[in-house]
Image (cartoon, rainbow, N blue to C red; front, top):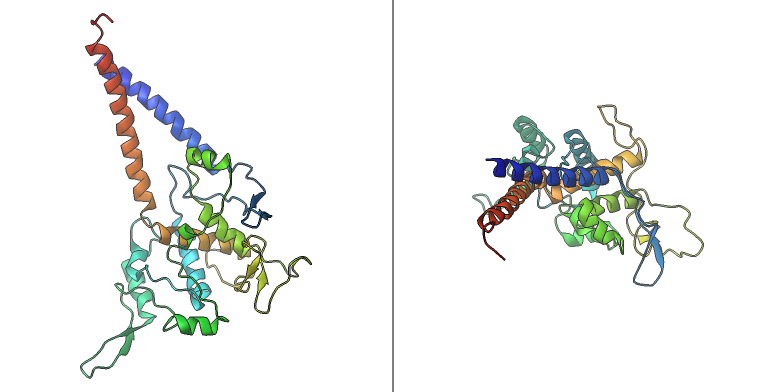
Length: 294
């Protein structure tokens, strides 16, 4: 028993120290490099690192923030962008925005979903159901391109995982220790706050292009989508572009990884088991071989 107690205390001390250090570093953003070198050999500004509730080994999504983010997607982003991998029922899943089943049913019913064919062989529209995926405003990609100057707005389901930036050496090593996995969310916040008008004299824009400080190449076909006071928040949260961008980025982080909280809980249990198991193996080895002359 003293052997097991000693192993457990040692493993707990080591594991606790590692977790506390990782959590503190994750919640207190370090001074990130100001620029990265792009493929043209020029330095581009790196989006500022943000503080997120879901960062670090104990991070969790803020339900109120996810609900605000969905509101922004529904009222602003969905005018152009699809979200093909998210069903209405997912909004009530554990670890998500926390909508009730009744809210999800009412929300889905506000949408019209194309279905069919019916008995006459014709397609028809019906109110949405919780099992339906969130419908797109456009019938196909060509219609979306025609409405957006030839550019196809990307699907936003996994956008927070599909976008990011390089922080270079030694940051990619440090990021592994502090569990920094929020580059996609930081990138989205940077893009939404990176519009500059007029652009610098050195940048020549074509018709339909907009200057963005954090966009690679600084040219973006999407006009500035958010402005202060554009979306009302009934909970009294400030209605600023900075707040909007953080809320939609958090929501897109959840759509890209809806099982994040479950993954972190599982990982925590596995790490505790492995550390305790390693400690027991070490002390068992010492006990078994203690009387053997080397």
